[in-house]
Length: 114
Ligand SMILES: [Zn+2]
Ligand SMILES: [Zn+2]
Image (cartoon, rainbow, N blue to C red):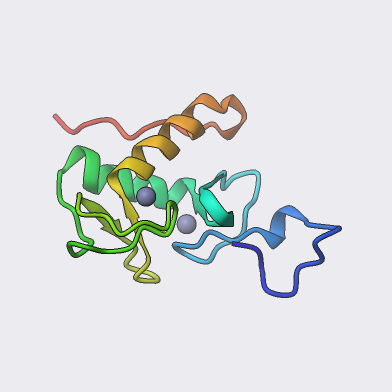
């Protein structure tokens, strides 16, 4: 999301906030934009990907609304412990793919535990 009051003609990195933890976009904290301006940062994506994709432990209740695609989803999702906002399995996988492809982000999908 954009920080409330952001000048649309002069948007800075620090005006972009993760919808899931509220932190700013920085060089150390890469960000992926979903639909309609919703954003998820690398830290949240790591938590979400680990919970939903690797551990299979969804934390969002059935029928939750995914903040990234704005759809009510019947599938597994991740609910941010910081804000209570949720992301769906599909968006988490998609965002992880986007962020990993972006070499500058330095972000990698969390590896499965052995
Ligand atoms: Zn975040
Ligand atoms: Zn979604």
